[in-house]
Image 1: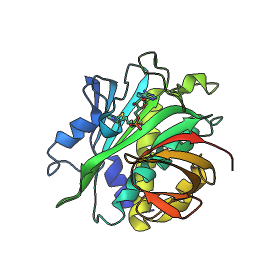
Image 2: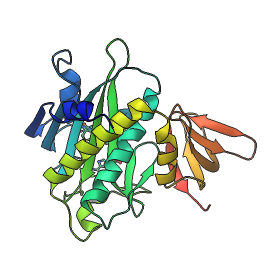
Image 3: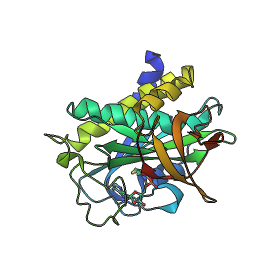
Image 4: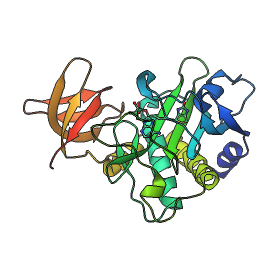
Length: 252
Ligand code: BT5
């Protein structure tokens, strides 16, 4: 680990707001030429929290809403970055709640006992001056009644899953710290994330039903490739998917 780089990231500004539309949006709109890598935004409440594909992220008080800006030296393997963030957030939750075992569901869900306690949203641009914003949302002791019912992986809060819910501030500190550690590791050796993510994933080697915009397929999940695509073995072949949703998980 490069201590100098880690220190630079840790000492970057951290803005905490009471209420904001979206912590990701805040950092996407900031003038990044004036803002160092590691700049962080968190909030007690998001009024327009975002999920993937224009979905909403329910963000009442009692949740963690944290975004961190990363400036990239290279865009090679940038598709693996969301998985880096998932691993960092999972480690941070387990650090603060030692009784928890967090698994990951492709591409970005943080699960405990097959219930969704958090999610990751990476946004940004990878043209000139590539920069990505890593957004982490975790339900700590929030009221989830506004979330539409989900057929699988229902929403849950940490305080219903672990003996003692962490302080949100402390969890935010550890999420940020682990993000920096994982980011530096990823910069040095980008593909390390493939094996680690595959090991933490709840779907690895399980039969899954997967829906893309074109079709629904069933097959055994074999992890991710170096583009972050989900690998599924069907009876005929192996396919790699860049987007889609898991509808069901079956046996090994
Ligand atoms: C995600 O999207 O899981 C990414 C969530 C990222 C949120 C963070 S908070 C900080 C930063 N700022 C932002 O604006 N966003 C990031 P996705 O996989 O698309 O999941 C969205 C779906 O999860 C919704 O359609 C609901 O079904 C469900 N959902 C919404 N809010 C939830 C919550 N608080 N807990 C669990 N599930 C939720």
